[in-house]
Amino acid sequence: MPNIKSAKKRVRVTEKKTLINMAHKTALKTAIKKFEAAAKAGNKEEAQQLFNEAAKKLDQSVNRGILHKNNAARKKSQLALKLAKLA
Image (cartoon, rainbow, N blue to C red; front, side, top):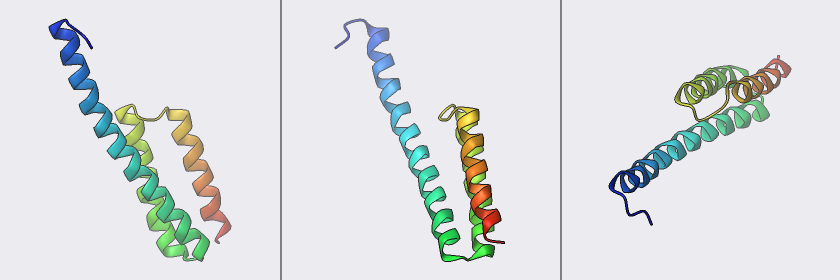
């Protein structure tokens, strides 16, 4: 446990940011799972809409520093391939 005042503050700030990042990651994973469920069911229109939402969440995660840009690009590419296979 830190003794210095600034170090104590860093611990508090890090805990808050960790909770926020975990919430964003959870929302991202949920969006991806919803898209994959729609794609597996073969519902192209719903899958297209959910793909757009998942892609948006991926881009937001990159801007927030939660994901690396190449990681998000790879995930978007994989989702786009699944969407294209529905056609």
